[in-house]
Image 1 (cartoon, rainbow, N blue to C red):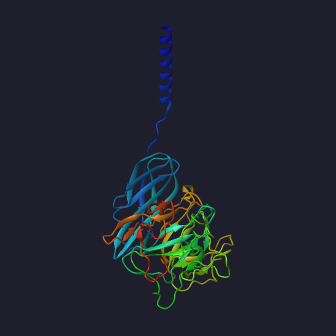
Image 2: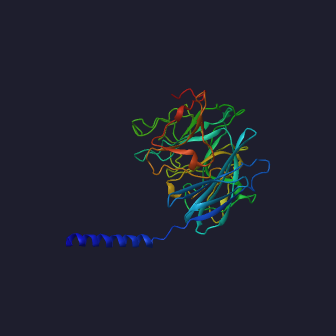
Length: 403
């Protein structure tokens, strides 16, 4: 009997201690934060959405809260815990044949006091036909990187033309805490994106040599070769011999020229070695149509630096995708938020993975439409392996060599 009495006393002591520990726990403070979405920089002739979706993301604590503003752009969020948040506002409205996408971001906001009001300014961009649909940038196993490619898809309702289209990467080449104070002739650095390298589809005649119909896509390959070939990276890579375009480097024999694929033209920047190697850690890519020729002999530089870049007006840019190495780099943006308010990643290098847009809807005729909210964090998915013309994208009629 004494043994049972001692055991009961021990259990009672443990219960008291546990109750004491629970009693000592401090309750978590819940914070209310007010958001006011503003659009002063948006031209007055562009309509404003009825409301905006506002998202709070705390990457450290894995917290995500989404709210909707009222018609005045105001919303009160009353269920946050103290922490560091990235806050985004997005909205969309159709007007005169275009979709106008609103995006704004407040990165790394420390929220510890209740009742605070934050102004979140949004910019606007209009989505057209062409989007960057799939990007394969981080290479395949065996440290093989010559199989990088970019698939561009006609997501609209009208025929587009690839003639004269440019693709390039912004500075800095990889996501980092480095920031540049760009010096531009007109004194408005916020109106430009700053490219380190620019390639262009050849432009001749009336610019209608390369039509891309709705539902069709074209491939820009680093090297338009079968990278599963026994002499390259057999069984680990992808066949790009059917690519429409390639960024071929002349005066070298390491990577042979595909006589069928059209060679892109280097318009700005320097390419070292035998190929255009974009960083396997993730670049910020844009496609755009220049208004005239790109002057290769002029450039801009940031204050206190010798770094050279080509400034491209934001209103030239058709689409942009920010790629980073992993989740921790998402807030280290290079891309203006009006072009891409978020970022996407595959999480590692040389893993054979790609990123591609998520399907928004499939038309009755089988044509796929993809999400394009100018926020890569929302629009893209990660694929276990890269795939050319995923989801049945059609091949342009003038490509006679693709399978």
